[in-house]
Length: 251
Figure 1 (cartoon, rainbow, N blue to C red):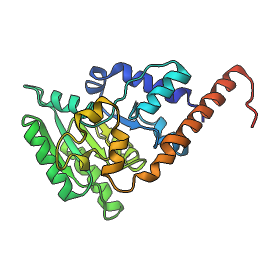
Figure 2: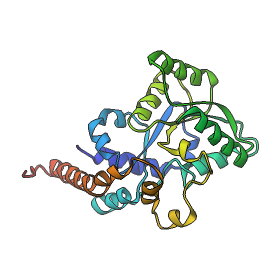
Figure 3: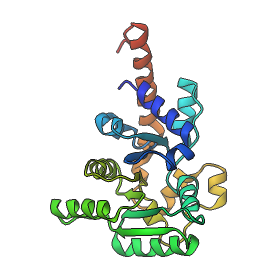
């Protein structure tokens, strides 16, 4: 995969954050990528190229981009350690007059999460919310229509990649005029406490390892994060730079 455009979009997105992101023109979709999801980016390049902005959720990817491309990019993920806290604080401000919609996780879990948000950000206007499970295609289309009808300024979609990216793009194409962020597992992580990660985990950038011990089914991702991602990203960078120089890598 030619990853020059991928890295450029990440760098440009980080440069304009947060003002250029939150006060952006209408109808924009942002998602976060991490070492685990990089193989999904390679499998669905057209989907991720359709995103208006990309942010890096993972220090390993930040380090590798700096090492191979010489670009310093910060970790920006939609959770309470970065982007979610910034957006919620902005929406909770006096006289902002902008609203937000949430879609994702199971309904009972989402109800608890919304209660956490309302407790911590009482002035944040929530236009609506619903679970991220659809009975059929018609139910999915209704969810999109309901969000468009609600007219929120922001929508947060947490369904896992690449389902959440496709839903966000379909929402935009259906005429949604707000700004969409994907959030992965953020909505179920926040059900019991708004701050999922302890301070010491954020301080030492141990979020990925913390999740391994607190969420089922994540141990299988270690291969993707520690082996597959560094190899694939390094190879893609090598191929991309060789293509520019006119030489061909030997296999």
